[in-house]
Length: 250
Image 1 (spheres, rainbow, N blue to C red):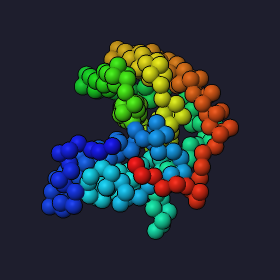
Image 2: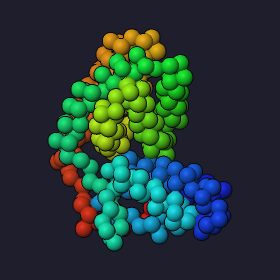
Image 3: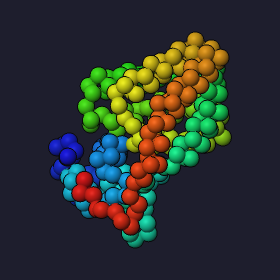
Image 4: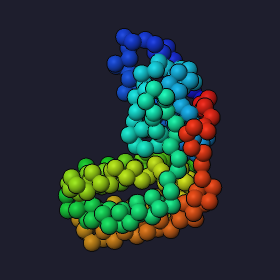
């Protein structure tokens, strides 16, 4: 797997790196998300900057930036002077507690968003829904990571529109969406989520806080019900932990 060929000549080109670092690190990040979500790189795998830089045909700088971003989101863990490993899939208890927090807070975030959203905000949410729908129609494995990123952006946008800083801090630090897609990604799951998203946007667009709250609550409950069998399975078959990890050649 390589990034776009236009990036290959930039490997080690420090003069061009500042201008292109953002787009390169985003491409590395998205490629790694796809492999993490699909479990192509399984939990417990060791990730090295050198190996990834060679694989993607870029310098170490964008790779390191992507890995730090993934570490911040809890998808990989780093040890001082020892590199990075793919984080284990969280426990069943973690998912239960995460859904409890989401059920308490996200419906209220949607209700507040209905009060605060402007036309441009609604258009942004509709566009995110459209992009997710297109990825499902394409139906390729390479879209796993992109869908997870867009799903996270959809919920983050609503949380930002709530204009409640404490709520935003709590919800964004859960990093719920990326971990959930590591449990299960399937087109039917994505299709159901998109339809639920559209109902949330309808409530926000109509400035109907009650409808937005109800639609988000229904979405969180449906998501939990879709995922319960899979986080039971993850507890039954726990992934490998760092220390017994293999090094990823991805």
